[in-house]
Length: 228
Image (cartoon, rainbow, N blue to C red; front, top):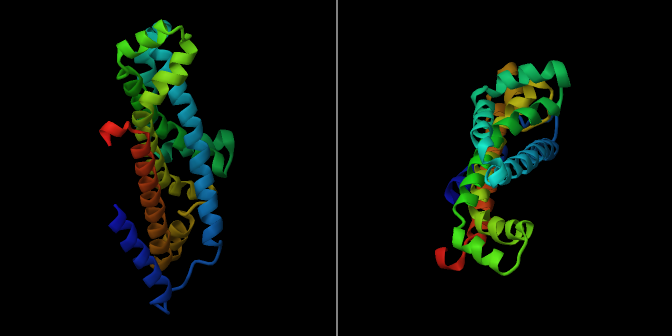
């Protein structure tokens, strides 16, 4: 993964500085495109993480176990819709801009986060919960100080998958007026300028790879020392 990021960085630098005939995309700055792209993904993933983890906590409690199948089904349905279809349905209600893209990314990110959060919480040994209860800890303290910390690596793995997918999927938001790194890609396709397409594609790939590497390091820190 690190070597892929390095080679993509070298390729982008070569495209910009080694090919004088290549036109640099100038309609918007790459910094503005990146910040907007990152902001859209961040908002969608934070919302998906809050909803997914909260739903996982609910369906793993005795009072919510009967709703687990419903939660899994709803999350799965959210991923069965192609992102383009979600955008087409969301635009009439939300208008053009970043909001339809956020909705599409939210639906696509919910399933891996919910699935991993449920798996992580269910892998916490019952003996650990019983020991915490025996020490007089309330149900809330057991959840926040025992279960969630132990399940954190598995939950983070789901968030990692959702974010990585979201970075790539967010590019299509440019078709409905969102400012993303997909903007030069679609402008290049429309104007028959492959240089714009390559510039946008390489930047999206670099963004996804670097983000994935950052999550990988964070996951390693959250794992118990014995399992690293």
